[in-house]
Structure formats: C-alpha cells, structure tokens
Length: 385
Length: 151
Image (cartoon, each protein chain N blue to C red):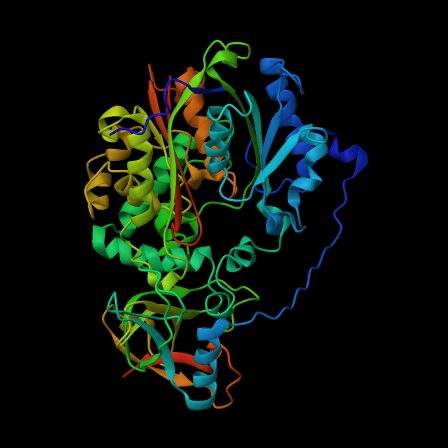
C-alpha cells in the first residue's frame, strides 16, 4: 500500500540562496539572512501574520554559532518575534520535512524556512564535528567527521573498486559545473591531475576531495496547495520526504552498507508513489562533502547496484542522471544547510530557473542530505513540477 | 554589501572553554573500572540476539532487552578499516601524522575506533591482527589504551 499524502499537497513557492563564500568574516549571519529574506519578499510579496507567514522554521547550530539557542540570535531578523518560530538543529533538509508536516496537518498554510551557517567563524569545523561523537569513547580519541569519512572512504573504495583516479574525475566534474553556478563557493576549474597531486588530509581523502570551508544562508517559502498561487506561478510540489538514522556508536555501523540512506530513499519513494527513482528523476542533488560520497550516496539512492560505485562513474552515471549540476556540496556549502542548498537547486531546476546549468523540461528532482559522521543520518526529498 | 574600506570591519576574539563531567553510565562505569584497575576490556552480550557489544551498554541495540551481564573481549583484534591523519587539531590526543583504525576485538560484534602505532603505515592492511598497549598509569578513560600494535 502506498502511504500517500492524500489530496493535500505542499508547494515550494520561492527559494533564495546566498553565494557560498570561504570567509564572510565582515558580515554577521543576521545580515546574511536579511539579504535572503528581502530576496524572498521581492519574489513573493509575502507578509507576516494572519493570512501570511504564520510560522517560521529556522535552521542553525549552537556549536557553529558559538552560542546557546542559536535561533534566538536571528529571530528578529526572520520576523519571528510575534510568531511561531522553531529551530531545526538537524540537517536543514529536515526543516522542509517539518514544514511539510505542519502544512499537511492543517496547522498552518504558509511557512518560511531560513537557514544560516558560517563554518569560517570557528577555529576549525573539525572541532565542532568532534562533538558529534559520544563523549566517552569517540570524542576522547579525537574522531571528527573528516577522519570518520577517511575510515569510511577506505572501506567503501575497497568494496566498490573506486580509485584515486575516480575521485579526481568526480572533483574535476564538480568544478566544471560549479563554474556555471554563480552561487557555488569553489568555482575555478581543476584538472584531475591537480586533484591527484593535492596533499593527503586523511588517506585516502586528499585536500581537494574535501568540500571547502563555506559560509552561506538560504531560504524557502512553502505553502499549501490552496495558497501557493498567491506566491508563485510555478509551484514545485513536495511529493516525498523521509529520513533515517543509523546506529549511534561509530563502531556499531557497517560503514559501507548505506543502511540509513536506503531506508530513507525507500520511504520517500513510497510516499511519492515512485517505484523506480532512477527512471523517474530528471535531476539529482546529493550532499557529497567528500568525493567518494557522490557514487556512494547514488548507490544508496538506488541509481546503481551495491558496490558498483566505480562502474557508475566509469559509465558516466553522474552525467546520465544529471547529478549535482550545481557543483554539489563538493563545490562548497556549509554543513547544517548544505541539504537546503540541494533543495533550492532542485527547486530551481523544476521551476526552469537554474540558469546556465538548467536541464530542459525537468519534472522530478531528488534532493539528498546527510549529517553525523560518515553518513550516519540521511534525508531524501522528492520534488515534482 | 557595505563598502568595507569605508567602515573597516572588525572581528572580536572569542575563546570558549567548557570542561565538564559526564556520568559514564552503569555499563560504562564497569568498563572503565575494569580497564583502569585490571587492564581488561569488557563488552555487553545480548543472549537473545547472540551479539556482544562494544562499547558496553545496558540496552540491546537490536531487541531493546536489558543487558546486565558483562564479558571480557579482546584484547586481540582485527583491523576493519584505517586511515592516516595528516592534519592537526587541538582535540587530537596525538600529534599528526597518526593512524586510526576500526578494530574488531575478538569476541565482539562491533568495532572500536582507536590508534595504531609501532607499525609503518604501508604495512597496515584490513584483516591485520593487533593487540592493545596499555598506559602504565591508567586514569579511567579510553586513552588507558595508548594504541594498538601488530602482533
């Protein structure tokens, strides 16, 4: 049986994104959000309060903002002081899942989502992600998302046949597309040879296999089907959303199994009534913070068989399935909101507003995100025009 | 965007220090006492699921039954995956470069992420057999195991 969303539908009416930057040291994140907010207001003319935006879902992280209750620092900028404002502290794509539930439940009709992150603000993002581990065993030995990815990369490359050469080609392709995306962070093209010559960070992950430190902000306006046309002529429909979490302790997990992603993808497809995502999707945006993750997550989404990541690259899978035409997370989106950037890119494709990297007649798009060490937690969003 | 030259933006230095104490839990307390006082590594068996967990825990990950028993695991183990860390962070207990590995201790069904040492990186491989080197002065934390080394 298909667990559908019934007759109610939720639309993404408008999206706005700040150009990702390696170090916006001269701008506070409140100022970054204001630019996004004014962009969305210019596009839709939305107002706050009854008959307008009645609920805000913000996305930020206490550790990255270096303060507790990080949403408290931006509530006034978001217009949240007299409204319902709630913070999504999990990866930002889940804010869309949450707003979708709020609207489907009939609780509110129009929801504003606003996310921000300045990875550059702290001494090192590795210090932040070290705290993503349990305090007894993981943090104490110095684990962080980067070295956890190194441990996963070796295991996955052994399973899938992925080589240093494949990884260099993945990065080079990401940069080619990023050059066409005015919002990407790392936009200069890179030949594969240069990627292969970059120093090791965490063998087999080289410096250029890792996404650059990024600052950014992003916003979306969502509305019920009845209200969507007040804000846009080209609504993008949320047809499936799901997430799944793998085990808490790092050593409990089979690092190459894509356990959580397969579950999230299956549930999202079931809700969207899609049997074959590979056949249905016109564009895919995956959150590939490290080069090896692009084929690995594509495998988890079902675009190639188990352990066939290398073959997927060799056979031109990323081009065939139009994967990460924005440049992807590899070209630089901050953590916590990299999934929202995926959703924004997917929505722009379906609206026909993706500029130089537009796919003609895109009808169905997948946006994926992950959080936690080495793909512990995954979210999958399916959008249709 | 404002004209940066005109108002000359300024950053303030911020330093957060946050020491804290966590209760290690029922199973964790027993684990750390055994490690510190007897150089023994303990895991939690679930008789229903026929699994032995490290880190030890009070509830089975799979069937949620209460786990009261603890068994000794290791000390020998097998490398499942590994990496060479060549960047430095203040939270790393050792200076880079150093080797991390996920080690499956004999008798356990889950892995332990820890250091490998006394081995050339080129010699490290999946399936390598290793044993722990304990700290002479143990304090009751996971660094009471200094690192693992090949048999």
